[in-house]
Length: 103
Image (cartoon, rainbow, N blue to C red):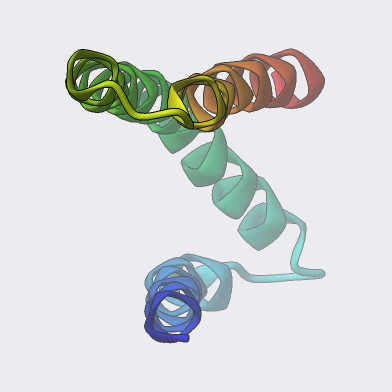
């Protein structure tokens, strides 16, 4: 629940940050839309790189957790490995698809 609240606040701040560029546009609003598109496009590349970095960090954390469970002899090691590495693969695939779709 706290994550959803944080994401909602983050989205609101992003909209407030992009709003002045749209308000400065004159005429039919075409310039404002183009300025907003340029700003979103400019930050899209670092955003996908951030998703790759988060995936790498999650992979390392997952590897340590799986290794720890494996050494302690837990029975659910395969389930933990599948969930951690599945989340890493999901992040990388989503970032790649978003980059291919929007750029």
